[in-house]
Length: 70
Image (tube, rainbow, N blue to C red):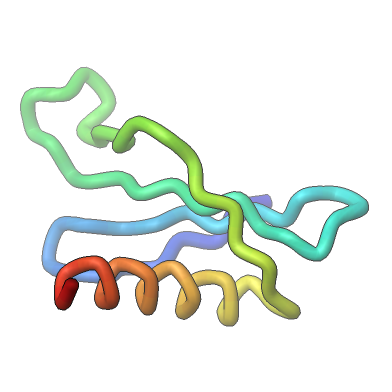
């Protein structure tokens, strides 16, 4: 089951464990009123190696932060 974490006002990420792996699958999604479901998932997946779902979420947030400062 995926955990959902809010990373900004309208941006969220879902974090799913990958069975048999120390990695988690992270997908970013945004609230979008024009989408049929009310949500828009960004293209592409990110795989994060972490001990817990919370650590995977923080790892993804750290990755986003480092990309903005480069």
